Length: 202
Image (cartoon, rainbow, N blue to C red; front, top):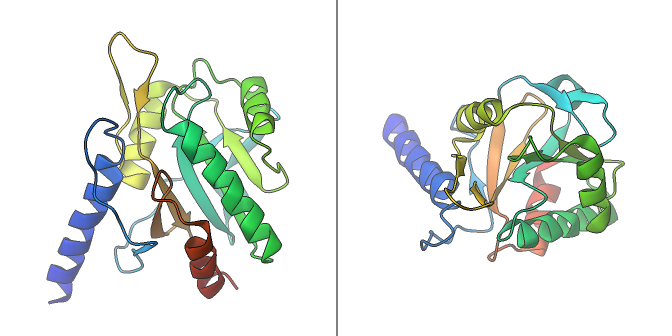
């Protein structure tokens, strides 16, 4: 029974993580939080570069809760909603005294250098004290990382500057385990997510 439950849960997760990046297709509307604590799903170890040009990776996040998503600076579509939503969540979490880090991985690393990531974060009012915009890898590397760590696809769109990617936010615990998925796009609910974070982050 437990195996069947986990299989069904993983199926839902893959639907939410994969379908979320298909901008032109309808996607499932998840609850405020999808619980993945039984999924045994971990983020691969990584070390990239943050918006200040400093090395930053999984070792810097050990023992801390963090929320991850995928964006890119010249995104013409969903990032223009997702990044303000992430900044809103950061503000709500900070006001509530919730100790959580925020991490955005660019899916356009050839264009998004550290300086560009810093300008991008500043444009949206991100607080860099606990928000890290990461780059410093190839498109192939981040594609494999997103697939392995977040069960998410990254795909360039021919004859377009757009890149398809997940619209979800992923909550990761101090051991690198993905324990929640939140919708980071049009069905984003900062208050519900903040309430959920309060129940988890001690």
